[in-house]
Length: 507
Ligand code: SAM
Ligand code: SF4
Image (cartoon, rainbow, N blue to C red):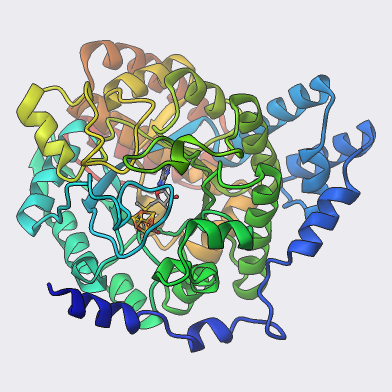
């Protein structure tokens, strides 16, 4: 594609009308003065005030900005311990002991933007550029399925060659792949995407091919910092086009949305407030907040000075605090911790209330297929910095992480039923707020865990998994909610069917 054609494409991406319609008196919902004042006015919360706020979260109510700001300023280590414990309790109330797994699939590192922290930015001459063909997407998907995954997040740089039509073809290709496993057939049942902001018309194309969640990270909510790290003349330089990406997705019919900030670009307390205001604005306008919040920390990327030299890096202690405050602030929202983080820290952060994570992750373009060729072992030994976006902290296989979580009493869920039963958007929000979704998911988690143990688990993981599944079955039989009507009976039948090799049964 010629440079001129790329430039012409760039010129028509942003539709100013699709920003302006959301502004109130010409202003967006990130009022920095308000955020700074809220932070400044809540610097010394009383012990009792903090405990009252914790109680509110435990009642599964979203916090107001003043309350979040107060939690962000807690100094007392004893209160932090109470908050960590409350984070896990909130998570258990809404999501039980489940952790949902996904695998990222990087399809293209071509990019018209020049984000200072990212290895894919166009000025990075060290990066080997590549975009997957549909055959390659198929091969990558097969490799991911072979690990036991059912859910993917498909990631794209922003470029005319990876436009909405390419993304739509990719999603269709992924859904079309079936791969024989030990007992049943493996497949990806939900393909989420992480891609640049798009127009409503383009988002409709993605909705039509059945994407799961649409994820866009604002990176930083602080406007001056945003301008520094995203050059003005690039598409990503338009703060508001990005800020309203998920509002446009709602207009296009995609009601399963994911927000996030890249921690390390600006003050972490400010970013937590930005995320909360984003969630509140979506709720206010559409009655639905984000399904998940992500909080990636900036990690070293090829050719990026900023990625190893920022005055705003978040240390491990503060990271744990910010995740806890997010957990308590948006009790019914999923929280995603990724393989960017080291093994021990990831384990600790999961314990303050995360709901989703990835494993056996490769983020090089074509990385899964290459790993299979090289080693017949997907563990990343030498990460190839010139082919991937940044360096991972945890490169273990899915089987290892599933086993570790089972040892911690957490059940891995590969459930994708909510989406296919119409339990998304306002329906799922209602179910999550009333802690009912967790119950359906408990049943579906057991069914999909059964599939995983029979189709993919190593003997060690299977042994630990069997003990866990036994406990889960006992609990299910004991919970009155399941015994009402025929739910328990239906579930028992589905469980037996799954044991016999039937796949993809869900409630
Ligand atoms: N190009 C699309 C965009 O920017 O929205 C989506 C793909 S981009 C590869 C996905 C996310 O990777 C970004 O939103 C950013 O938060 C994250 N990212 C970029 N550089 C990173 C780094 N050095 N460390 C950690 N995460 C990074
Ligand atoms: Fe491109 Fe996204 Fe990387 Fe920015 S973060 S350079 S937009 S891939």
